[in-house]
Each structure stands twice: as structure tokens, then as C-alpha cells.
Length: 182
Image 1 (cartoon, one colour):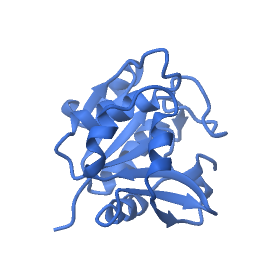
Image 2: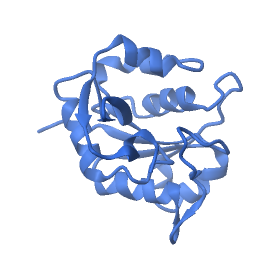
Image 3: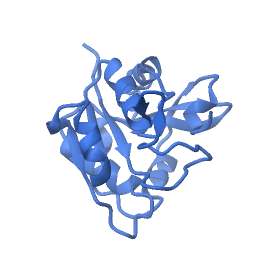
């Protein structure tokens, strides 16, 4: 049976725009927020999901996933965007998972098929990620062999430095949405 990594939906962006994307997780996109659309896609993959969110997004996330699948994190000020803190906290909270897929909550265009493709690549690689025209995007998957390094991530850029140290399997897609752009 193939491993089933946990999708960590990271609700880190309280008010900034990442990579030129102009939709915050709390913004409406049709009937639901961007966060809800991202959670729906993650759940549609059939993989376990953990919403790792700032306090202001926890209630909304808890309406769509079980409360036990919502982890509230308030990042320290030295982790400006919170990504490193949220990733480390999510991995620690799901320590027995078969790996972890990092998916920012402001990426509702990343669909279930891509999540499953990145998850599948973790069977043979420590790191896997979606890419568009040679540029690494999301989701980014981490295998269990990186657990001790992931839970110890600290400070801005720590996750990026980890990605530089380990070669990754690239899942090439013809969709700039994986880069955080529409």
C-alpha cells in the first residue's frame, strides 16, 4: 500500500500578498473563502489534512475539517511570514504521518490530482514538488526521513535552505497556479 502523507494547509498569510497572488486565505472566492477552497481540494485528494492556521482563521477552518485537524499557531516575530514555524508545528503534530505536503492556504487552484502526484513521488524521493517551467512551486512534499530536520526548522528561509540541501523530484505542470499566480 502506498504511503499517505498528510497535507498541511498552512494559513500563514494574515495580510500580505505572496508571490503576486492577490487573494488572502480569508478573502471570498465565490461562495467560500480562499482557505475553504484550498481545504476542499486537499480533502478531495483523500489524503489526511491538517489545517495549520493563525488564530483568526481557526474558526473558519474548524467548520470544514474536524477540530482535531486544526492546529492554531501564532508565529514568533522573527518568522515574518510564519511558514517555517507553521511547517515545523504541523510536522510535529502529525509525527507519525507517512510524510507531509506543504500547501499554502492561499492556493485554491492546486487540485487533488496534483497533491496525489506529489505524494506519490515521496515513495522514491525525500523531497518532491510541483513545478512550472522549471520554477519550484507548491505543493512541496517531504518524506519521513526529514522529520528531525523539519521539526527543528527555525527562522526565515529555513525551509528554503532545507530544499536546497536535498534534491527533489519535480512534478512538472502547465499551470502557473502552482507558483502562487493565476
